Length: 375
Image (cartoon, rainbow, N blue to C red; front, side, top):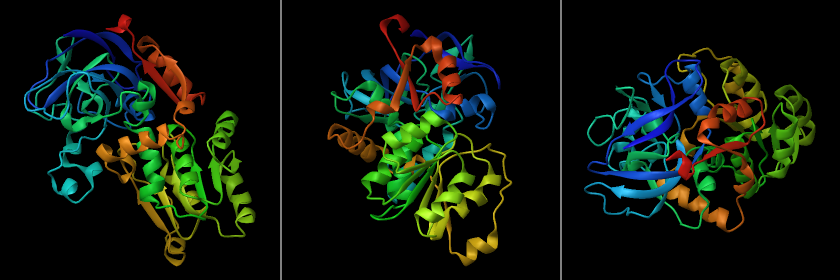
């Protein structure tokens, strides 16, 4: 079928809205009519080259939710009419990582940037006569997509699509970084550095985990206000201000858990993040830098003598098939505020405006909402 999508054809170029052609679902695949797509910073990494796909053109988008309109052969647990959210990492359930309970590290993730479908290694999207590489094998910046069943999570039909889209990456990652990777316990102090979609979810997870103090650090005044709204007890404009104030608040103990959710990680800042981390504490690095970045500033003596931990995490170290419905259940129970995380809604044609707003600090999370005019 012919529709349209947001593509980039080279690094440092704006998103281009143009005609694309999407193939029909094959064995193990479903076609989804998209209703909403989140504007995550990771898609901007495609523009800068920090995350290099195998080739161009690239169809952006890895957060999204919609309605199943067609299923391929062998799909027996998803039906036409089901409401679904996408999972930016597929989970096969059979590889060693999946069998060990680490579905966020599924071996299928090795092909996320290669663009070829899970089912048969072919391409599902074309533009200008060329194969298109969809972000995370999804490409949610289009009114329709065809995707493998392993990237689809069935959700309750009463969940708003704009809310469900956030679970495809940002909320699940930020929440899981606190609940799983950091394993925050009641009474611990938590610092969250960078208050966007991931940071706002991390703040709420820290509150639900019973943290005593929740420190939020962000240079944008409006985001610090939002941090308080989402549960922060103290806010600071930068890491230097936090390092000056947190010792007094914690009687010198610092933060037992530090969650780094900045838009782009700079390895030279890691030592400051560790300085904010308590003895025997854990610094969870959620943010990413460039794929070729290898320089990090770290005082190894302090790392050893204070017995600190540096922990990486992807997708919140969780299981999307379990965690996405669980987090949406918390939302329905009024314990997880996802509505206020959707700051602005955009048309597909306004995707560049959405990313401009993100980079200028005006959004917690922008969301593209699709209408019949897009299809």
